[in-house]
Length: 480
Image (tube, rainbow, N blue to C red; front, side, top):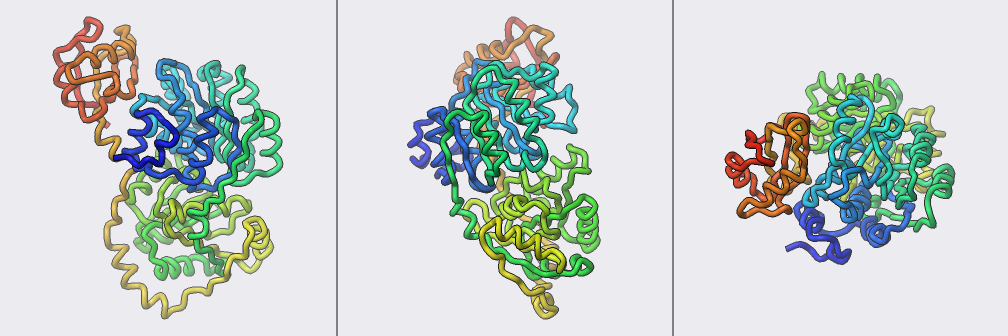
């Protein structure tokens, strides 16, 4: 039986069922504060750190309000990075699964034509980076006339990455006045100006993130540049984390640190902007599943990794942007769990450190470097953990996915088939209703239909002898 914590918002049964299967039983602070106003369709400015549950805070009310019958996008979500765009799309897909909500991710380094074809399908939510979204708007492949909701996610990071002009250009293309929600870990003056220009009497919400922030133990180690690699190895042995992100300033530094750890047989992989997008997504997914313990990354990974039990963050290089410290360390201590953040500082970086401490509002305690004796005392336990296969992490969507069977049909647009033809036929099968049918993707010569609630085999058997619009199609379970 689902907890009543989300039922206070009087959500539809489809959304409540999805939240239950996603193990969303109790709203976080940001969800508790945002949902009532978002469901009333108020403009919002929300100051909230990463790890606070903010993606669900805007995805839940938007999924609740989405009208399935409408083919054009009704919500536009702008994110600073490709990884975050993919994560937000997955959140919408999971929360909106039982309402058959279709989300598309739009970002660079992926073929434009692929995204163009996806947007020709029924698409309820478009999630993307500003540059690629603007490309689609200007080429006419992303229609904005039905947009009712716009979310600026990680607005401060879009500012830091120089995307604000593109964001303003996108907003200027909107012919309607949508409900707007702006989420940001920090709210600098430029973000306030953006809000004043585009938001209508917004509700200000500040989330203190008390669930996570006090449970992060911060520490600084003063390390000479030439001693960083050896110190990193010692810290890894003494801390012996189950899961760790090591942040570096440049992709060359990521390569250097990764190769150093890899040569010493660490369970490690890397992530930076110089890698092609398919590889980046593969690494992200492997890390989420727990296939390796150490991820060496640039700040691109400070966005888009939603993992609850990263026990240690190491700032191998001090971030140049003060805000980046908040986003990096926010990777640990999520969902109320304890975490630790260790920052290496060279003797010449004290001024940068002071600026970060002023920004975050506290002095980061100094830590002594691990001694030879401490390393020797912990090395056996470290070696044992390195030799063991990391425990596979439970995927948030596992319960939802387990109830879904994706079916392939060998007919699509060229046979004049539409989504309503599949819904009308399948919903009339004995034991089936329209609520048992998930996302339908129609291509030129094929169609993919998600069957929900564990009824895949029932539909598979029946459709082998049931025509659609007078056409008998071949059907089988789709390959992943």
